[in-house]
Amino acid sequence: MDPNGEVLASLRGVTKRYGAVLALDRVDLDLHAGQVLALLGPNGAGKSTAIGLLLGLLRADAGQASLFGLDPQHLAARRGIGVMLQSAELPDTLSVGELIRLTASYYPAPRSLSETAALAAVEDLLPRRYGRLSGGQQRRVQFALAICGKPRLLFLDEPTVGLDLPVRQQLWATVRALVDDGAAVVLTTHYLEEAERLADRVCVLLRGRIVSDGSVDALRARVVQRSVRCVTSLDVAEVGQWPGVLQATRDNAFLQLRSNHVESVVRRLLAADPALSGLEVQPAGLGEAFTELTNDAAEHPQQEAA
View 1: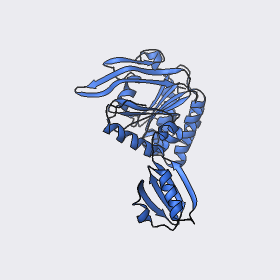
View 2: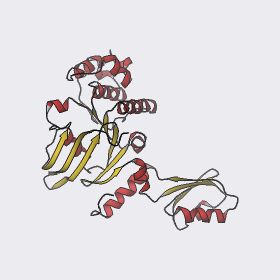
View 3: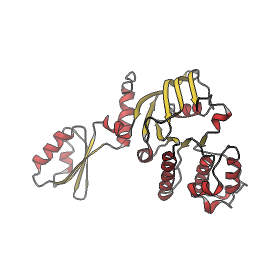
View 4: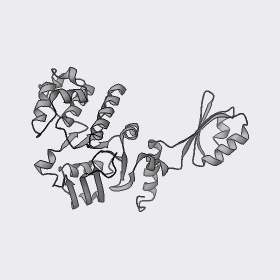
């Protein structure tokens, strides 16, 4: 990731309402070249509204959205983006190859059919009719359509829903290759493993406001919870009652804990079992960090993002 990469799109002081519902509240957001931004938040947080504004599908009530320095509804700006939505209606009777050629024709300098098919791993699907594909195969085709125009900015909405793990991993590798080549990617996903794997930067929205914006490691660092794993004969139920232990489970010889006071818990473990071995302390995963952050923001709605 280049943190100083060119700003390809932005929101500046954007507010958007739907009647009495405040969907976005004075949001500032930059999308940089050479960066994957994971836009996370619970349902209703404002993610879809933010993307709709950047795509030119919505108009802000206040503030400004910009796409390649232009109004997002400008044709020249739209020709620089690729979009993979969570659901798509495509002509069932066209072959995959025909769909890719048709979509590529809307762009000034698209990828070749063979390059697009290789990047999206759909070479074997090119002669087949779209309507006869499985759900997972259709998602691969939708990804191909999103990248065929060689977009500088790619929007991926739940891109790996319905894909098995090898295909998901192949798609992740393609996304990273596109970013390494200078593209920007906006990712929305409920698979936090996917965000953790792909994202250079994580932006968390809650009730229309950005409550965190930074790297995955920076988000983890805001969370006091840690995981502890060790080999011990100590009783799991007893350890689970110790102060600072949030959860205790056993996996064969291993005792696994979650703690928000890991130093004191580790000292007590070592004192209680001198034969303890295999001690590991790990930071919270993105899932735990996201949950703690959104819960904390919900309890303190006036607190600004760090």
